[in-house]
Amino acid sequence: SLEAEILSRQGATSERSYTRYLLDGGASKIGEKVTEEAGEFVEAIGSQSAERVASEAADVVYHLMVGLRLRGVSWRQVIEVLAKRSGQSGHEEKANRSAPSG
Image (tube, rainbow, N blue to C red):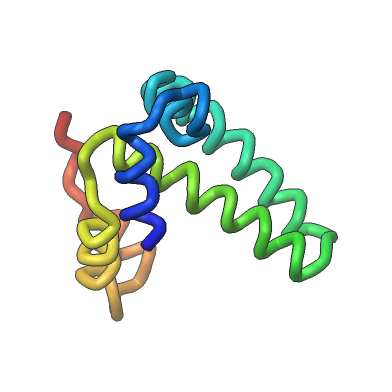
């Protein structure tokens, strides 16, 4: 439902929609926000309450999903990648990963 909400807000004006504001800012604006929110998440997991950790994680996921929307990548595609990695060592998966395509 979050993916659908982001898609619907893509058609709004940036004055009325923070999501549209981010999309209008492009990869650099969205990347800046993902970095900021990820930093806040790291701080939260270090010493803050479970509620704060969940809140910061939600912020990271939201901004990540806006970035996916910008690139036309669905959440389903992300889940499919994770499913393919299931049962595989993270070290092994990373060693076998092909170079990113442009």
